[in-house]
Image (cartoon, rainbow, N blue to C red):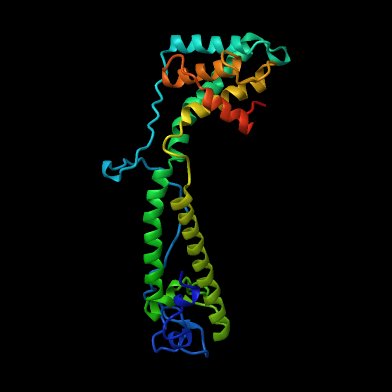
Length: 287
């Protein structure tokens, strides 16, 4: 990756500062620091970084198969039945809580699960992250090339370290007395180096997203994994029963019921997902 040095004006800062027309706000010599109003150059104004979540469709030509998770919960009557079954499998309840309190907590966790599962699936889409990282890395490479080849005056204004020009009430542009040129060079270098370091950091993130990748394998079943994690969390927070991966025991039964609640699929066996959660022993725990 090009270093910050390539962002240096080709003719050097001294040449830029000593040219006949230095730009709006810069004093023609050191004898004064006031000039009449004149059109100021266009300045870059940034409003800060903003997270944008956009829905994208993957082209069929990409050749990448991504598991599609359909969140299709059953009707309200069946949901109530599922919640009732989960509450029953949580017996004996922790801290002598009543049926109403346990039911309310299960409904609350189920609502979270219904919202979180599709978001988790989209967030950890490895192929989608890799495709975008390729595009972003190409754009960053082009940006570095353009910065390295920027003409001297443009390069100066891109990383201008001088205090901004202000305007008085009578329409006169004012700028503080500039520091020595050596100090200006050091300030310019610091500004350019910081930007180059940020570009390098972004390219490292892209490299990680491209290989080994950010997110899960396309065959990873987010819905089943989330249901197993939430089942463990419900048992830890609401039940005095021991959590085991035995078939027909409470943990796997509750995980299957949660999966039915978000997918509509009845009697699904979540053995693999439950075993994975037990191995990792990290699931959302209720406080």
